[in-house]
Amino acid sequence: MKPEEKIGSILREKGFKIATAESCTGGLIASRITDISGASEYFEAGFVTYSNRAKTCFLAVPDDVIKEKGAVSHDVAELMAEGARSMAEADIGLSVTGIAGPAGGTIEKPVGTVYMCVSCAGKTFVRHFLFNGNRKGIKKQTSDAALVLVLDYLEGRLI
Image 1 (cartoon, helix red, strand yellow):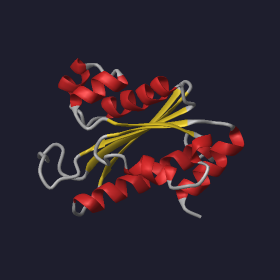
Image 2 (cartoon, helix red, strand yellow):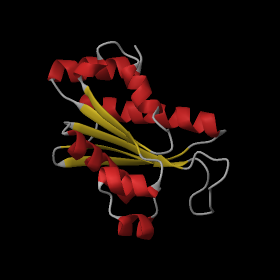
Image 3 (cartoon, rainbow, N blue to C red):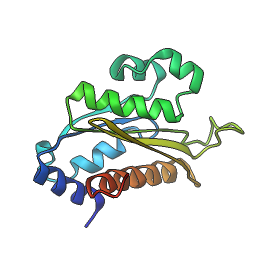
């Protein structure tokens, strides 16, 4: 069973709703979740906030945090997930922000750098990854890891 299928089954069973906030994946995660029939029962909203302005306007990520920490950072991933959860009035917020390449990388944050976060009432779980490959491959690896992160949360593997 694909992770998005398991996630849907668990969300439906628990009566939970999820919202996504995506930057580097451009909506791929929301697409995968909504590829499952019946996703409208548990998928509340998907925000594709590719620009810094969009992160601020739609997810309430403070501009000063983006300027200080960078759009691809632990703090911004956490604020994006919390913003998605809050704006959509969902139980769970999932965010991803990263550098899919081939341009945009630096020594500190090379291409493939990704932060993701699952946010639920009172808890956040942020993870940092460095993926390899081309743009399409990095987007796919990011969506895979993000769905596994949600599944880990739903199945009680995150502490």
